[in-house]
Image 1 (cartoon, one colour):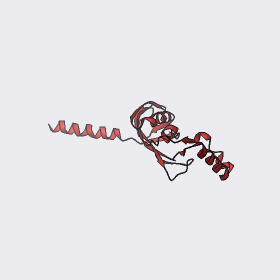
Image 2 (cartoon, helix red, strand yellow; image 1 turned 135 degrees about the vertical axis):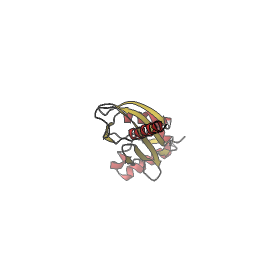
Image 3 (cartoon, helix red, strand yellow; image 1 turned 120 degrees about the vertical axis):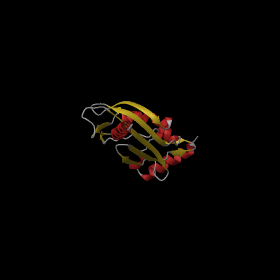
Image 4 (spheres, one colour; image 1 turned 45 degrees about the vertical axis):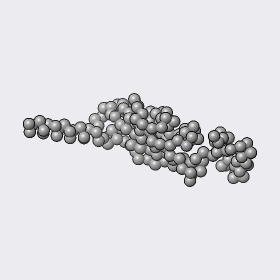
Length: 166
């Protein structure tokens, strides 16, 4: 009986060690906040579970949770990343989890964004709220305001950046 208990303790310890890996990110790309999600003011965390192949590329990805409007961009982005397991044997595929956090902040301007990296497990992307134009007259006024603030700033915005109110 003592032998069985000792064996279970050893197996439990090995499982716990196997679940904690030292993973580093070799290559990454920042996701673009989807226009539809931004306009609808959808924010949230998209949790992904994926397999990293022998060469460090992401091979198969599964969405664990997250808003539907943010899932596609998260899947597309993580497939472009490259990882390395520092505590694994070289060339051995491994499983990893990652969370993309999408946030909207009314204190940021429409063109501003900030990123917070907690690699290799999380990236938070925070952007300004969309500019809402209620009428054609408001749209003309917004365009006139852009012209007053200068061509450098106005040229960074397109008419498609202004979304009609629902």
